[in-house]
Length: 435
Image (cartoon, rainbow, N blue to C red; front, side, top):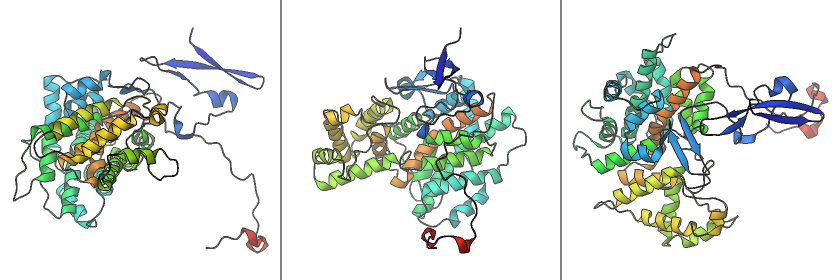
């Protein structure tokens, strides 16, 4: 017999089915609640509401578990590559050698953007934010690479390859634009991350030396950011995608959602915090004390997470990567020492422990990017490059699931009750609003 939940409203009782996921997550299925009772549920910010059934990513925030398609993030971070992870998220399984070769070649062949798009970069203001450029340019791809009316499997594979590959080309071009330097085209000789770094940092007068440790650190960053279940930007992709908008517009919307400081921009806030502490000459102890005071205006950035009530597993991995990268000659950064000191102090403080505030992925991801040489305005752009396969996997899963309907949430209206129109010369002056 199917497990059931009972909802009692006054003298009426409603029976609602219980859904159990493969990792024993349980949910009350309320999809027929309004039809049966005339009631809806209210869940501000949707923190307790499941919006879909998905087989892509599993998170247990209490235990600090993150899995892509069932694989622990720790194993994937240690043994895999970003290209392989992109295939895994989209297709559901790790690729064979032949499948990975075909996928990688398709990414390489799709890395160029239409030459006419160069004119778009020239039209942006000199100091345009790279995320604004990225969102605009991704949306414009639909005019250069129009989608067929019927998306057969090959067409899907092609536009997904376009987005995964071209997003780094657009990102690098936008950076070169901000620097006033000529663009560097992608090379078929280089792998995914190497290609991106070469487009970012090489120039006609200076070749870029590929440091394997830097390449691996960026690859690791992208792996750890490739998907994270139903976060703000992924939910945006599902919401916009449910309207059957073209995939480039859908991804552009996801990029715009990621831009917010409460989402993809959080790692920049961590770096700014560490810079302030370093400039003050302190070791972080005074800052920690100020952050505990409600009206101090200070906040400990990079601690706490909407989902994780334990350590963010991605933070543990990036902390180790920081140690390795910043121990290299010439790579030492005093901000990393401050970060370690703040983590030590916070994890001994009952104020943070009682509130389950542990380091999250943003606490160390900014340090990785700074060590690599990524400028602050590009931090969230790199996040978007990493998240692209996850967005595409969720879009693909949604459009091929049944039932596939446009997402249309409800609300509880709290405005005025019915009123009637009053001619303007009869309206009381106290209601007037200056214009």
